[in-house]
Length: 221
Length: 221
Image (cartoon, rainbow over all chains, first blue to last red; front, side, top):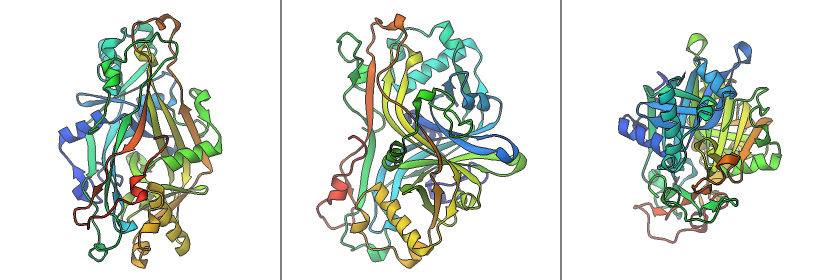
């Protein structure tokens, strides 16, 4: 699907899959639920890459991460090391007439940069709100505000979206001419992230499922 | 959701989320469709992490990656540098009574190691078969065999599953006692990767959608 960027955000392989439209990049970040956060752990001979899945949110031109102050990933990331955060949406299986031309339809955004800790109280509260509402829009309005202890007990990092790139593949398979009349089904099997029936907590009084849960969807579902 | 491993595969944060059962690890790798492959690109001061989404497959105790010989990621990976490959399955949104306790149900496998190129012809053909059948089981049987040119024109890397770890969260939200009677819906919204109606290639003669496409599903759908 992709390659590490040469000048980092320059798409080297299959450059026609590069997308530079800022609104397309933001749409991917707003639709995704999980980011894969990469950094270099250890030093010298022991240096090695680590890739960890995390919740995230976009707020304007920043990507937000959060977690426990004890999190080794967040402690490392906020120390000023470079991170690479990748969000990938899988849109479909591309089934060609040969194995060689099988592929995926996808949209993927890669962000390079250095994260900084959000320490301003109001900014931090706003970031925590956004981290919840990113996953399930409208949820914060249904919840009590964060307590001071919760805000103090959470680390929030902010990564600027300055250095980012996007790749995407769309459309039908592209087959070799000599395979076009092969006796095999070819096309795209679209994929979505879909919600199943909500499972109420057993300790909860029976009540209607609220709109922000019942109507939750992501992308083109 | 997680942290970089300390002794790499040791789960440091929320250790009760660690899963050591080998069959559970293999089940995650067999259900996943995309791996996020991380490595350190550049050297010295310019060294930085890169995380790229890729198709993959599991074959016995190896994780297979493939792509164009021109792929910078594969060229870097096969040079013997360490990689970190992470596969994450998102099983549900965990909606608690406070924002603080919102979470995700997920299963995630992290593999550390050094990839080697698969050069033996038969092993390479078998790996290419597996890379297709991983995405859509039974597909290879419907396709013509790979041509020699296709096999030569693809780079296949193999990463041993020797050093890997798994984390998972399952079950309902865990709330603070003082929130238990809050007037808010709490529970889990299960998520799945679901296939929509297949979209036949427009250049194809009309024909029935074969079983391997029509019945495609992943996980507990």
